[in-house]
Image (cartoon, rainbow, N blue to C red):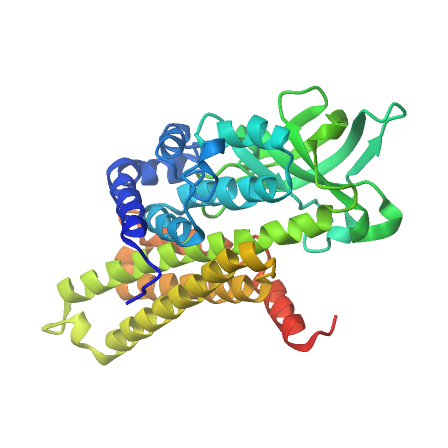
Length: 387
């Protein structure tokens, strides 16, 4: 049906499906309940190449394209969205920016261990008082008199994988007067003096994906660890988020597919008033709408993935495509999981089935890497050219 999906794509999709069902499915509920970071399976995912699907082979990656990444991420997220979150951050937010803007030194030093699963990467843009408004960032990076290091001070919040991250792509203000044009990007090693982590956040969903604040107290970052030029940080952050939103859309689709398939199976088993509940029109309507929204999400994701792949040749942004995919797929995930819980009735509300976990996990896809409101703003600005 889709001639851009090759046999090689199908192979990595099947590999991800097999791994998720064999290695992740048996532990997903436990890690959701305890909030324990699934470090062992994350290491295995790195060994199998899932942490660096689009990263060139010379830096430890698989060297495949965005379609391969999307197909694999959907399969992982279909079984457990927490693993999908960690995979998405390593691939999209951490690796993507370094590939595009990093020096050879940064690629060799930081990409290889993360994409092979030896280390964990993270991305830090949000602050307690600065989420979507990056120009209001308070974290400061000041070049020392010798011009060799930036001294960083500040607090970042809601950093995915921060409690376990070895390396973090950090955005800090180098010239506050320039607002968002004064933001710069850095690669941070978390075992250096001046870095500390706050408490792990107790979250509603994706509970095995550890999230925390990070603190900088006169942290010294070498100049060579800056990504791109000084003042390029906002451009880098937005470029990376374009890629990241394709990942979150894929995660959302995986959650929605899992909930839909569970609902179809349940509607053929559960009986009421002498009939399978799948014979009732109200249930049929829910299932039909689920399928339609899931497939529309898939098409938007493929469109965004192809636009990203084309951008490597043209240099064109794919902001509109990634925002539409993220917006629609995330709202689809929330809608489908809500209907799935309803179809399952009391069982959908019980922790005996994974439906309530899908429901809780779906909500974050409408929030992180740009809320649904921000996506609508981005799309509208793209249409009108008005800011």
